[in-house]
Length: 302
Image (cartoon, rainbow, N blue to C red; front, side):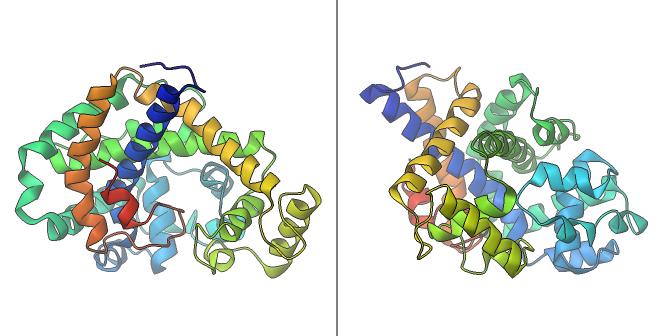
C-alpha cells in the first residue's frame, strides 16, 4: 500500500515496515550465533567459525572467487574472505554447506521454540513470506536471487528460515546499493556504525580491517563532515546515515507493497510471536556485528 512519503501515514507505514524487517532479520540471524555451529560445520571439514560462516552463507552462489563473495557481502575486508574461500571447497561442497546451515538452524530453533516450532502460526508465516519471496524482482539483487534459488525445505519452520533468509538478503542487496550511492566503502560504513554505537566496539577486528585502514576510513568521513575531529558523528553524518536507511526502505518497499496496513500489522504480530522468544532468550545477542536491533525493540515491534 502506498502513502505519500512525507505524510503522517507514510511515516507510520515506513516505521511499520522497518519493524517487520527487524523481525525477519531476527528469525534468520539465529543461524549465526547457534552453539550448534562448530560441531556441524567441523564435521564437513570447515575450519574455524569464519570459514563456516563464509562457506555456508555464500553456498547459494556456488563455487565462486573470493572477490565475488567479498563484493556481495560488502562489509568484510577482502583478506578475511580469502582466508576461507575457496579453501572451504576443498573439504565440502556448496550443497553440503547449505544443508549443514539448515541443520544448524533446525537444531537451534527447536531449542528456543520447543513445541511452538510446530504451531500453526509458523506454517502460516512460512506460506505468507514464501509467497512474498516468489514474486519479488531479483534484478540487481544477487544474494537474494541466489538464496531464492535454493531448494525450498518441506518443514514449515525451515521454509520460514528459507524465506526470511532470502528476504534478509534482498534488503542487504539494497542496502549495499544505498551505501555505494552514498559513496561509503566497506570500512567507512562499518566505522560509521561503530561511531553511532550500533555495533560492538571491536567491529574493526570483527570485520578484518587493519588499524591503518580504519584510520583512513575515519579520515575520509571526517573530511566529508560526517565525523568530528574527536570521532563522534556530526549532525551531517547522522542525517546522511538516515538517508541511507530511507533509500534502503524505498528500494525494499516492494516486498510489502501488496499488503494493506491491517495485513502488515497482522503479519508483524504473528512474526513477533515466533521471533521474540528467540531474541529475548539470547539467541541473537546485542550488540552484534549486523547492527540488528536489541531484544526490547524487536519484542515490541508488534
